[in-house]
Image (cartoon, rainbow, N blue to C red; front, side, top):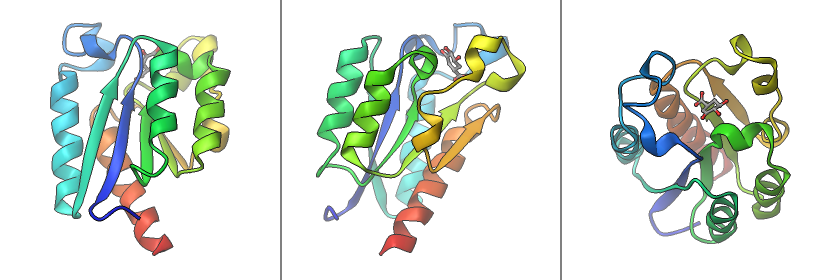
Length: 150
Ligand code: DHK
């Protein structure tokens, strides 16, 4: 347990383009809007958040590995790596922290290739299709899980 509870919010590839990228699918909010939503949601419950976005799989793996000892749980939208990355799933398993998987869009109502996730089997919860609210739900649920552990 860190002194102030900290959460890691991980954003995968192309999420840096939120706000301008296919807004009819991913919404009008920017990544910074979503990070601010995570920060304020966590702050109401006495937690702080650290955020990372990368378009590079290895950088995401490094950030997840570094979470051990630094953060108490992870909210992750692995974006396209959801459907392809054994490395990200292995890193999440390795750090052994509670994980909430988020997707802005309802991946189950989209192309078949988006319906498989390497992350879901190790996530405590999966939230898809709630837009940016999904991050708020994820942060709240993660904190509830952590509070139950105490
Ligand atoms: C974001 C992406 O970039 C896609 O590759 C995923 C996810 C879905 C989302 O809905 O947030 O398939």
